[in-house]
Amino acid sequence: MAASIYPKYPPDLTKAQFDHLITSIKDYSIAHGLAVRPQPSFVPPESDPAGVLATTAPVTLFPSLFPRACFDEAKAIQKAYNELYASIANDEEWLKDIVEELAEVDDFIAKLWKVHLAVKEEGYTQDLSLGLFRSDYLVHVEPSNPSAKPEVKQVEFNTIASSFGGLSEKVGDLHRYLYNTSCYPPTPSSSSGTASNLINTSSLTPNHTISSLSSGLAAAHDHYGPSKTSNQKCIIFLVQDPERNVFDQRPLEYTLQVTHSIPTFRVPFSSILLNTSIDNTHSSRPLLYTPPHSPESVYEVSVVYFRAGYALSDYPDETAWTARHQVERSCAIKCPTILTHLAGSKKIQQVLATPSSPHLSRFLKDPAVADRVHQTFTNIYPIDDTNAGREARAIATDEGKSNGYVLKPQREGGGNNIYRAAIPKFLKSLPESHWKGYILMELIEPPAQENAILRNGEVQRGQIIGELGIYGACLWRKGENSPTLLENEEAGQLLRTKGRESEEGGVAAGFGSVDSCLLI
Ligand code: ADP
Ligand code: MG
Ligand code: MG
Image (cartoon, rainbow, N blue to C red; front, side, top):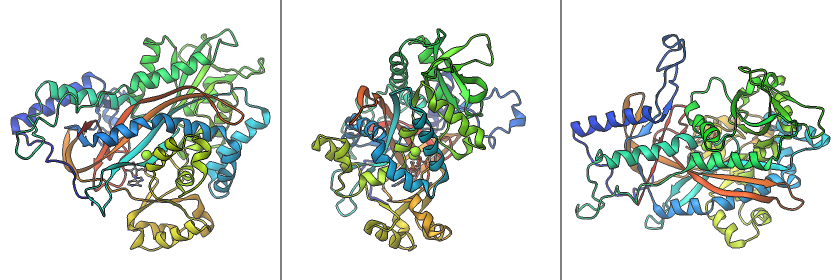
């Protein structure tokens, strides 16, 4: 474990202070929709047949410490990251070789690629794409030089269903409320106790994810132009059903409805073919949506926002692929297109991170910008027949050496990775020809710190790890050599915090919590 670079934190609480803090969090959370539908293990479905119950989202009692310079750098480079991934999605020639190689061993990637090729053959009718991205980081301190400045190192870049924008803004507001209502005792920033409090108005981080992500969707809606079918335009959110994390998504829908006056509807991924159709009387293939609760009103879909469709379980049969194909071939603006979805593969991240590779400079023309982005990469290896791939095989098949690594397939949504000593056994259970579908990544081990998490009414205290996510909103028009960026914004942040002993940090998956940064 990396040594701590942080002061003693969080402050100790008396029983009265603790009880008051917990009551304040519970009430604030429900009053402000900082909530989730309960896990079946917490509230068995038979105890809530009407499905009306919600519970507080797992949150940290205190905002977690985060180095200000790291936070500022991650925010500052988000627009460059947006441009990078828009440019990758725009460059099919470059993507093709990488994706086709993966498709040989990965059926999910193969099917996505097949949908793209089918639409390409027919001809895409929409040249605008929307990305609501999230670049995730951990703080890294060089183990051989503990006095070196901490840096952010990228865990991954998400191009589909980047979640928690709704809850992350609210947890920042919660922590600010707790500070403003004196729920936090004074926290001296030095052991002598004389310096100013660690928690203060300038160390708590403002956040604007809900308005920024909704503005991205609204900008795409506007750029779509007038309805082609004389039906009113709408945005649809493609969602999983059931969805425990619905209160993360709803604030974006409500903002689109209330602030932007855009009709917005939720469509379960499994109901695409039931509720939508393509109007074949127009050569541009508009996507029509008929609300099942109001079948007489038909809308033309301007933007399809995927909050589903990234997991194998979303595609139980071929009909689901027909549905994905229907959306892709329509002229609705996709968030994301299949090319943008594929650009977010872990393999692409590995290719970009290849030492002294020309790839980054292909997409980011300013060498200083490319260099700043490059600084956030950690070592990632292919597991193939290249020199780097052979080096990776030696590590990944040796239990001692694999301890500092994580093995990742081309999947999203948590729970898919293989960690440390489990890697050799896992790899050996696969035919060697399939190893190239995985990447091997050095584990980033952030400095130790403590906090407490409130989950399902119980408080878990201990060593924690916080993963910073920076959102980006980017709308671009396909271009011959490079995309034309119509919108490019940094769109706020997320801190997800998990117990140090847990390998994965998924909040919805039940390991993590939502948090906000206390800058030091
Ligand atoms: P997913 O797309 O499924 O979220 P991630 O690459 O984000 O996949 O991995 C899931 C989790 O595994 C991360 O949130 C983080 O907690 C942990 N993890 C992944 N890569 C690393 C790494 N290089 N160092 C430390 N932890 C990692
Ligand atoms: Mg991901
Ligand atoms: Mg992740």
